[in-house]
Structure formats: structure tokens, C-alpha cells
Length: 116
Length: 114
Image (tube, rainbow over all chains, first blue to last red; front, side, top):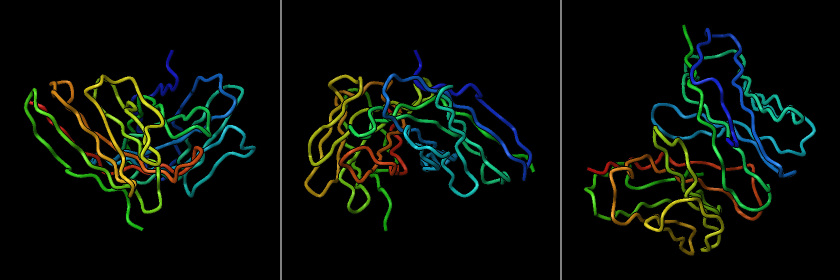
């Protein structure tokens, strides 16, 4: 079974609007971390946001917020006020057993295209 | 603070050859992880090194190996290259110890095998 599922291969959003990128995960480990990365066409993976499984509040970093619903095993990324520079691939990733190293399992990614 | 650096950025090899890729982590970071990214398989974890020891290993054949030096720089080696090894190879740097919410990637090395 897929450990990280991103069901939206591609999405369009109008500039200045908000957009939600979906991510569901599967783990039986009580301690895990969830990450979102942005990958522009240049190839570099840019860290956006992190959520620990024991964190009580949803993580936020500037225009990025993570809608963490633990019971549903979902960790959706919300980008507010989209900008043209947000056009890129977005990857959700999970690290299980959150204190045992830094191995990440990635989803298949969502290509976001921001329309002017 | 300088970011993660990877060298070379681009590489072209032929089948059967071997290749060595290098990754220098962010200063003070002791963990280096390697990932392979291909259009077909996506992003897959290769291995992680922490304090010169391999801490985690992904499901790749023994042709893929790595090491880490005392200054935390890491190298990845692929022997007997196959066409399917063509990929973007990314390394990620982290402070180390237990899992950290800081994992920063380098720009990658794009390997083409002909």
C-alpha cells in the first residue's frame, strides 16, 4: 500500500487565490513527521513546512499552512494568496519513527500552475 | 549560512562505467541522506549517513553505495551503471541526532547514462 498518496497530479489556481493540495498517509507508527516540499523546474527541493504527529496545532509558515487531520490521516497543504512563483511540483513526505533518523517517504507529487 | 552543495551538477556516463557524486551538508549538520528521482519511480530514498555510519538504507541494489567523512561530507558511488540509473540524485542535510524538522536539499546532480 502507498504510504503517501497525493491524488491531484495537476492543479490550476488563479493568482491571489488560495489553493489546497491534498496528502493522505498511512502508518501505524505513533511518532511520525510530515513534510511538504516545493520543487521548481530547476530541480531543487525547497522545504516549506513540517508537522509532527504529536503537535496539537496546525503548522504555519508565512503563506503556507498545513491542515493536519490525524484521525483521517491527512496533511493537506494550504497556500494562501497564490503567486506566479508558486508554480511548481509539490511533494508531501513522511518520516516514520520520528526520532530514528531522517528517511523520508515521498508521495507522487502535485503540479501546481498559477494563472495570471 | 551556505546551503547544501552537490557536485557535479550534471554528468554523462556510459553503461558499465562507475560514478561518484559528492554532497557537502550545511555547516553543523551531521546527517546526509541521498535520494533518487526518476519520472517513473518518483523520489526514492537511497541511504542516510550520520557520524560516518550508515543509519538507514533504502531498497537499492549493492551497486549503490555511499560513505561519509569526518567533516560530514558524503559521497555516493554507483558502479556498473545501467540505463535505468539515469536520474536526478538529491542529497538532504539535517542536524542529525533524532529526527529533525530541518531537512534541506541540495540542487541535485543530474546523471545521464548512455
